[in-house]
Image (cartoon, rainbow, N blue to C red; front, side):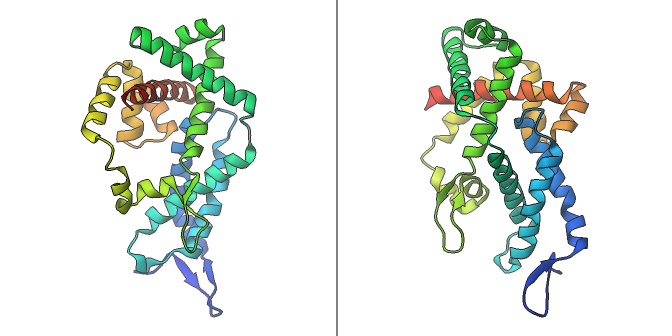
Length: 246
């Protein structure tokens, strides 16, 4: 099987236009899925642009002798490049981060008292508009998403291995054996059962069917921004349930 990259006579790795065209859909799909965690003003085209750097780097550095599929290897680097691009934008200032914490705390407080919380209830408690609550939920998702890609371990040829790389590596599964998976699954199942029908549908289409934001919006006949709102609210409620478990 021919490698997706080509080597010049000078033994320098380069990429072919054919390879870039072949894997462009992979970049677009990763951007489409990542978009569900981002506010509307972050254009999907920007994500694709960032992702192309990850693709080109993958074509240069991929070593087929390691027995890893190129799509798997490239997918991690493409997503990482998108995260790096978003981080460079630095559009979540300290004041906004504080608001995110306040909104999350309000969800936890209401859920602790009533068992469930809605955006409307949180907005009333904090004297915010529902749109402002939704906006802070989306910022919170972005902040959590970025934290997964922070460097956590050093390696010989890299500055470090991101947490997302560990999750994609079966050998890293041992690091998570301390988690009581059965109990955690039960807690999640119960928490999902308390979500609204729309929230459950969005989670199922995104995490089980692995659809993009646009695909989910088309299926549910809702706007992409509304799907992002539903997703962000569901994620906050599930994280709140897991926080109680921990």
